[in-house]
Length: 251
Image (cartoon, rainbow, N blue to C red):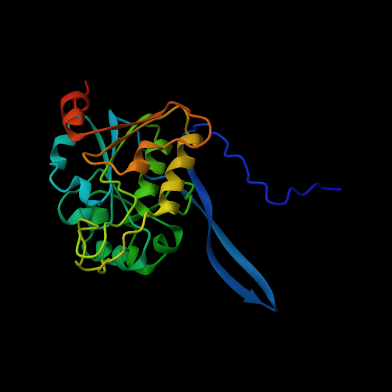
C-alpha cells in the first residue's frame, strides 16, 4: 500500500545541469467521442545559447530607475522582460501574458533579439516564428522565468537588478512602466510572497549558482533570502559596489 504523507511539503531537489536541446509540448487538444486527445510536437532549441560572462537579470522594479543598463553590455549577457524592450533591448527577453506578448510581436521584438514565451503564445498565429519556448517552463512570472532560463543556459554568476518583489503603495512608483500600455495602476503595498518564494526555491534548485541582488535601499525581507539551510549562494549589494566591483569586461 502506498503511504500518503498528509500535509508533507515536497523537498526541493537540486537540478543537474544539462545542455537544453528542446522538448515535446502539447500543440492541440481536441475532444472526440468523449475522449480528450492531445497532439504533441517536439520543438528543437533554435537558440543554442552559450553563457558569456555574468548573467544580468533585469526586472522592472523602481529600484533600478536611475541605473544605466548600457553599463552591462561588455561584461555579460542581459535578460529582461515585457516592456523593457521600449527602452533597452536585452540579449534575451521574456513575456508570459497575452496582451504584452501581442504588443511585442506587433513590434517584431523577436526579430531584434531572442524572445521567450510559453507554449500557448508560441503557437498563436501572431507569433510568426518570432517566439521561442521558455525552456522547461516552470510557469513563473516573466522576470523569474528570466533567471530560470539564465541557469538553463549554463550561467553560474547571476545578478538580479530591479527585483523588488513588492508594490510600494498608493501614489508611489511600483513599476518602471506603471500606467503605460499593458500596465495598470497599482495602489497596494503588498509584498509578492509568491514571487519571492519562487526565487527562494530556485536558490535551492541551483545550489552551484551564485545569486546577487542589487538594491540601494533593500526592504528587510531581502536580507533573508535563504530559507531553511543557508546554502551560502546569495548576497545583497548596492549599486556602488556593483558598478565598482562587479561590472568588469570579460576577456
